[in-house]
Amino acid sequence: MDLKKLSIFLKENKIPAFRLKQVRDAVYKNFAVSWEEIPVLPAALRERLRHGIHINSLETLETRISKKKDAVKFCFALKDGLKIESVLLKLLSEKWSLCISTQVGCPVRCPFCATGKKGLKRNLSPDEITDQYLTAANYLKKLGEQKIGSVIFMGMGEPFLNYDSVAEAVRTIADPDLIGLGQRHISVSTSGHVPGIRRFAKDFPQCNLAISLHAAEEPLRTDLVPLNRTYPLSQLAKALKDYIFSTKRRVFVEYVLMEGINNSRTQVARLNAWLRTVAAPKYFVVNIIPYNRTGGPYRAPTRERIKLFAGLLEAAGIEVTIRKSMGEDISGACGQLAGK
Ligand code: SAH
Ligand code: SF4
Image (cartoon, rainbow, N blue to C red; front, side, top):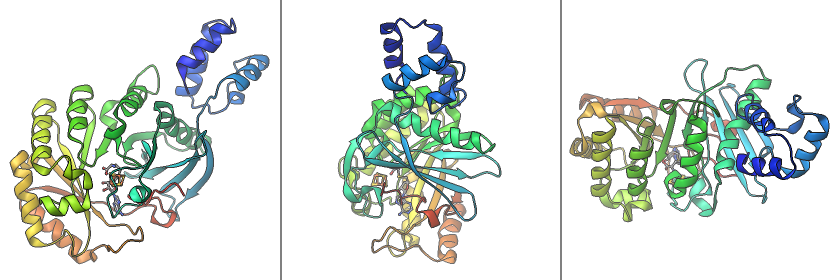
């Protein structure tokens, strides 16, 4: 919700200021998504607010639950009718992670990603980003489920091409007076926007940074992540080096594995060598994401070939995780969010 708007509305309507705190706590601490869910407000006031202020900028069109019940995809309509998606994932035993969107579509247009297919429609506002959290939290609360333990900015869009809104949303999510999830439980994934990485290092040194690398050689990376034309690997390496130097934090490297494209032995060696130009291996965790189908010419390697790639990298002294695909049956896996 827009707290500034609410504050102005209350003043203009001569409603006492303590109502602001009541609403703020109800929305950010108790995850109310409708005025009816705030019983401390007198009914007449709720009615006035209902006509004057949107408590939540999203309308939930659909909630899809995966067969294994470890992923829930939300499809939201924005006030202008455009659609976005968020996904709740049960990663570690009982904890939920929420993967949220930052743009409608994405201008980077990586050829293997469903979000990039139609290019960018528009940026999300800070509220449209935060409200994904509040709505998902409301959903879990009503089910009596565990709370959201971490937030990953890894849904639709390139977060650093909408930096100001993303930064405001991160502040709201981390602010103890508002949502209050610690910065350490917030991760942002970028396709390699160098100025964004530099700002992020200064603004949020406690948050986690993930880089979608997918290739460690220039022409291939430009094919897979067209933003590489603007910020080539050499610039990215320098930005990451500075990031690690100033934050002392590890960087998560995402690598979508595609058979015959980026999974050869030579490519393992290149990845290993490139990472070493940035920092010592202990500063990296490489997340291998087996390609999820998005209708293109790509395919995921076999289980054995994925393990082979991971093993070679581990043998070089690098920590590797293989992301298990979750929510593929509800089109909620990495790269499948299209806002259809
Ligand atoms: N735009 C940002 C964050 C959103 S994309 C970024 O690119 O980092 C989130 C992750 O999903 C990225 O690592 C992206 O490369 C990955 N991804 C995209 N399409 C995919 C697909 N078809 N299969 C598996 N992962 C995919
Ligand atoms: Fe955009 Fe990320 Fe998809 Fe590339 S992978 S098109 S940067 S959302």
